[in-house]
Length: 95
Image (cartoon, rainbow, N blue to C red; front, side, top):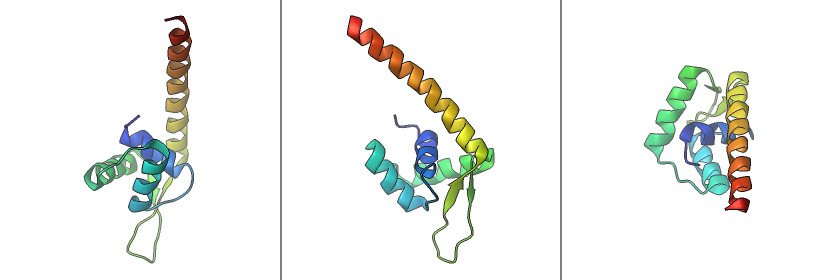
C-alpha cells in the first residue's frame, strides 16, 4: 500500500509526530519512502479535511495528531482493505 493519506493516518494513530518522524515511521512499518513534497502535500490535504491537526510546539518542528474524524476514516478504510485481503487470500487458496 502506498497511499500517503492512509500511511500518514496510520503513523499518527500511534501518537503525535512531526513530518520527518512520520517519514521514518512509514518507512519502517510499510517499507515506503515518502518524499517531502508528497508528505507535506498530503499533510495539507489531511488538515483541510479535518483528519489531522497541528499541535503547538516550542521547536521548529511542528507535530501533528490524528483527530476523531481521521481515526474514523482510517478505521473505515482498514475494514474495507481487510475485506479485500481476506477475499484475495481465500481465492488464492483455490487458484
